[in-house]
Amino acid sequence: MSLDQVSQSILYIIIILVFAKVFGELAERIGQPPVLGELVAGVILGASVLGWIRADRTAILAPESSVLVFLAELGVIILLFEVGLESDLEEFLRVGWSAMLVAVIGVAGPFALGYYSSILLGLSYTSAIFMGAALTATSVGITARTLGDLGQIRTSAAKIILGAAVIDDVIGLIILAVVGSLVAGNTVSFGEVGKVVLLAVAFLAGGIAIGIFLAPHMLGLAKKLRTRGMLTISAFLFCLTLSYLAHELGLAAIVGAFAAGLILARTEDLVHIQQRIKPIADIFVPIFFVMLGVSVNLSVLNPLNPEARSNLAFIGILVLVAVVMKVVAGLGVLKRGVSRLVVGVGMIPRGEVGLIFASIGLTRNIITPAEYAAIIAVVIITTFITPPLLKGVLSRENA
Figure 1 (cartoon, rainbow, N blue to C red):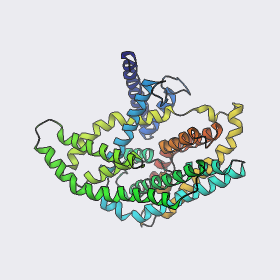
Figure 2: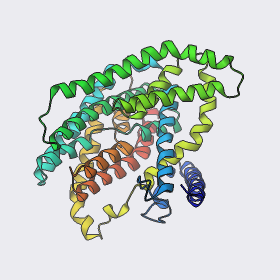
Figure 3: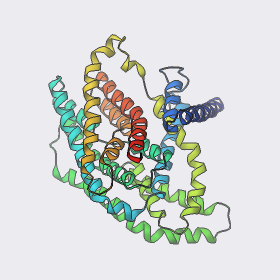
């Protein structure tokens, strides 16, 4: 990267943080979660309005954009690490059955209806499977940030949502593996599916069990060292290590970050780590949400655009399936005193997970550009409606 590109990247970071904080403040002043303002800031900075920031992931074509994408991905890792730090592992396990049932309903319903809707609208068998799969995974980032902004991150409903979202990721990986085999012309092997499941369970259960044993020793050693910030660096390295291992095993990196937070939440240094991580999160997490907004192309929702008009009916059906079936998933809550509606609404957003599904489908020629645009529209709508919906439902529940 040349000096000019470095300079441009720094300028973009300045613009992103300024816009994120300005629009986050405006959202706060009108009674909405700051995350909504950060998403709007991204849309304004992106190609739909000002066109100042690009979300191109190709480093050769847009080195400065590649840097921003990396910082955004680091932001969501830090976000999930922070969420894990604020979670109680024992409470998380206590709501495990509810989280499992919510996740299963929240995957099966959107997948089935998304698949059959796509078939009825003339999509191929493989494309229909992928469209159904793209509707399954919940983006924990949007909901986690909104719950945090509203002071609800420690509630049982939040723990069920987070747990279900993690399980969603695991099931989504299994579906992707199956779809990948179909596209490659291979028969679906139960052995391959079983391997993905075992890896996921082994990482989450084994990683947390081993981490709980090792973490106190790691932090104890860090506290004996004289170099400034060793405890904070050790905690952050622990987060990055588990994120890296999760990614290498084929899981989402955010699963590892969340697991790292859960582990360190049980240590005596929890308060110190939380205090040191918050300023880091305040810088990097807004970049993630702004870049999520930058990825939005409003033209796919413009009824005056002839190309978009023919796709709007399909988008409407997919959005209806995406929203209704995740709300229905809230019926899986078994724990008394927990609002099923809050959990269901919290499961709505697809966010970065939906974008990942869409990009994989397009690059592998599983779906057409029009179908890709439909998935992006679902991501846009579910991402933007969740914060105000969640706030409204919580206000009604607490009234």
